[in-house]
Length: 234
Ligand SMILES: [Mn+2]
Image 1: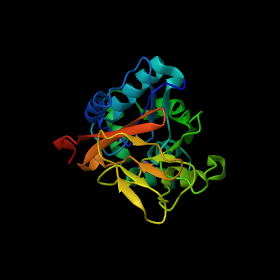
Image 2 (image 1 turned 90 degrees about the vertical axis):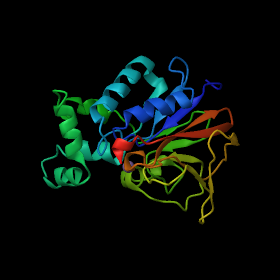
Image 3 (image 1 turned 60 degrees about the vertical axis):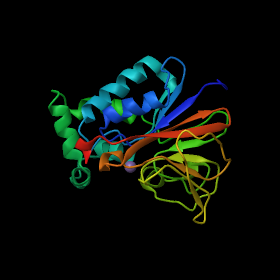
Image 4 (image 1 turned 120 degrees about the vertical axis):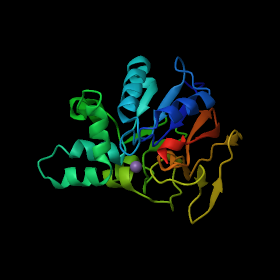
């Protein structure tokens, strides 16, 4: 377990081609690595159903070594089935229709698979205590002391608790943030030592035409890598 690599990606939003390229660039090994996706698999992009199939197969094959964390978009989709129409409206305002049509064009309805999405946890704690993975942010380093709202929608950047790895808010490049506005751009393929505190932010807005980024953790070191967004997403 101690020697297992952790490969972390986020905010695919239906960008499957880029995800495959990025995993290859991160040298992802399905037979032995831990794979963590930080949420927002659906909405906005062009291969939403395909991303679902991709992760469904990986989860089936990898079991506990494939950790799929819940983002605000999965949450909006799940909530859209509630009786109050405000939830469906909110999801559709955030590109939910693209997800609905992507599933329909594959002769499915996403609600058929809601138990699969409901199984997504809000966070993941590294058993070695090196980091906490969460979609959006934390305000308290004990994940249980945060609201769901903070974990899936939060944009807290002034956090300097136990290291969290997040997506959700797109930046031009992967960043390390150390609270009070201090940050560093993480250069691709450069090996860094894992900090004990702060935020690593990995969402680089692939679906908006920038790039898809991820990281690999090995022991107490890590590196990031990115692939450019394909033009059709722009
Ligand atoms: Mn998000």
